[in-house]
Image (tube, rainbow, N blue to C red; front, side, top):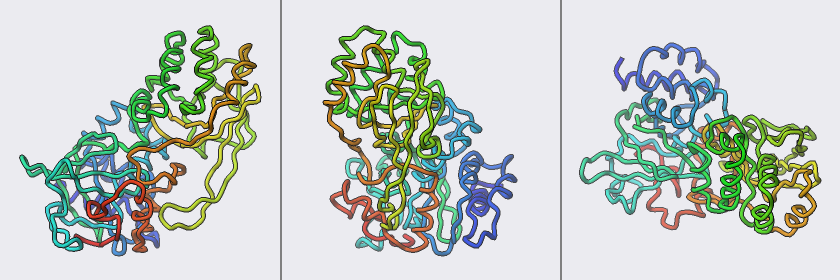
Length: 417
């Protein structure tokens, strides 16, 4: 079976109609021994997406098996371990989905924008595409030297379109040479800390504490299943000074308290009023999980969003302000305040923690500052929005792009180009 035939068959297998006439996993299993995209097919199949392919205008970027295997190696995961993280799977698939525009060829003219080239030939002024991950865009340019279409992800990694253009209804698929990384997926914790400068104080404290703690050394590298709780710089402003001056034991205790065993995405990994063990032996915290209405990224309807507050065994509280950032085998959740455990130094640390500011995660290279990452529904929500012909990309992208002419699917979901 050649690549184009495989791509068409994969999408038939993975995207069921809204009436549920196609069972996505049944046919996807038949591809297990053939094709260049069978690993990505397993990821999309695991989400059990549904779509009316004649109503939804979508372009899907499909990493090859070689690309997925390279990604898995960097993450320290097997394909089975990845599939056991459905929120991560959704983060990956949604970022490789361009809703609202069906690109029949990357070399076409854009009839909706004065018949200009669809893809820029200038790497310094690339074409921008809003994705189904409302926090991040993909940039594209045509290489003047090779003519290949290069793609730049949120972290600056480069991929190349290597084949495809196969069509299923109004959905087009293209093979790409590497898995694209959004600002929610990193190979390890240090990469995430470098990307988010507002976490630099926490990164310094984790790095220093890891010199005295094998537990922190492994988790900091992203080599153990764990959840990092990361206060931002403003929250740590005064507490960090005390911790740096304190004995190493106190620093280790506080930082180990900010690591929870296992990968615990919000909201699936938490239960209201439940005790949660930490990496600091004998110390736990209490989770308070509720909901609050927010504007849905794709419809502007009000939908319930999780609110997670953690209470330490010494009484300090911190709210999660940015959810579900994956780093290797770890997960990272941003806090608006440090959590102080019940240790001998707690009194002084609590006094300093109370004086810190409470500010949310300042986002970088993201489509919007009002949407967060939670649940397993971004890919499905984008498909449904594309079927309705809505234009959430324009609303979600208003904070990062000044010239919509560089973004074909931002102002209007245009159909086929």
